[in-house]
Image (cartoon, rainbow, N blue to C red; front, side):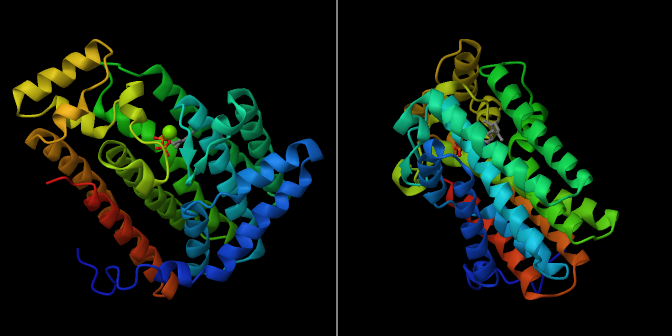
Length: 336
Ligand code: FPP
Ligand code: MG
């Protein structure tokens, strides 16, 4: 199926333009939350909340709301709390991955040590939950708690399956669905829920968010092997160091180049870091990235199909543009 009226990156920032004011409101809502902390905690929180992220999850909330009847105050609160949840999870993730840079700035663990970073992540998570409770809908707060549980479960599965030769590609997809796609799905379906859409459409929005979240993590996993720390603004290469089995690793183990497949399988079995310095220029590496990128592109195309269920609007167009932007990011990872 083709999408004649979904523009292909006609204007890369168009999707942000349609929600620029509301995104500013979200940023201000996050900054305002730092005032709820005691003076001992507040300065740390201010510093954490100052770092500018890509605001993908708030963007998905706002655009979904705008495409289904309009952005309400509760969408701003929801977008802010979702970004805070995401920030909390990244603070913990950077402790686990021993990463010292994120969003072009030193991570909390690099600045203040692991102990304080974990506690600050917990505090931010708790404040996000307070905001969720303030929305005043038990069903909604339950869904959010389930999303956080899934997110944590995904991380536990990842931590317990490092270098695991029994891990399958299906296990990988389930793991990234939990650790990354959960918040994307929550962003879109939660926006739909707060808009009081029917269950069927909320389910479809959840599916679209899941597809985009999986595709985004595939991109992130390719970037970890092909990107550059300075351009990415964060520490890369940690997946290989830790023994995370990401999609390109599965494709390397299945490579038609027997030498490469054997080398990678042996490294995984012996819990050794895969030697990418030797692999990066090979045909097999380029093919593994290309196959991974294709998996992401296929999910983006499937995600775009859901947009047909929404009425034509600039916000729907902007959502389509976001999916094309993700296509482009994925394609930029290709080394062939
Ligand atoms: C980034 O993965 C991390 C996640 C998608 C989720 C992290 C979740 C936790 C640590 C559980 C704790 C959760 C809360 C809410 C406190 P990555 O390492 O692949 O990506 P990166 O390259 O951006 O670091
Ligand atoms: Mg990480």
